[in-house]
Length: 174
Image (cartoon, rainbow, N blue to C red; front, side, top):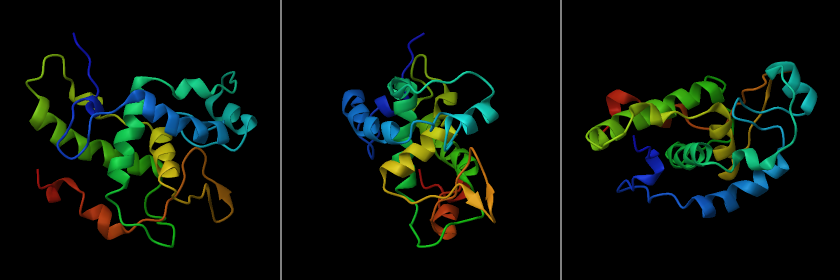
């Protein structure tokens, strides 16, 4: 079975991904945030270990693979559709937003590529960490605390609730 990721398919509105170029964009950010992983955002190795409960080492290259780069690339596009605000939106954390992002890609992908040999709708998956990384790449501020409590591995972003509602499935114009 041939496996292709959505960002390789060349949507009319999103050019097909260039993995080498995308890695050059991602690498400085993951170097700066070494405990950002697919599960989410952590401030330190001890936070990471307390949540993930396995031995971890700093390895920037863990992000240099097609599945993660695909997720980051598509997340950047989707987050770019949200209107930024000055205040954090505390109604949805990064984990909730990743589900909105996945749902947004499913209808478009399914309609265009359901006959593509080897295509799987599950390829619309986006990890929590990939969405956070995409937001950082877009220059978004974020917070991993709320009312003095650390949210790890999730974070909040500043975006308009109205712009998110416009992207819900019943609003799709595909």
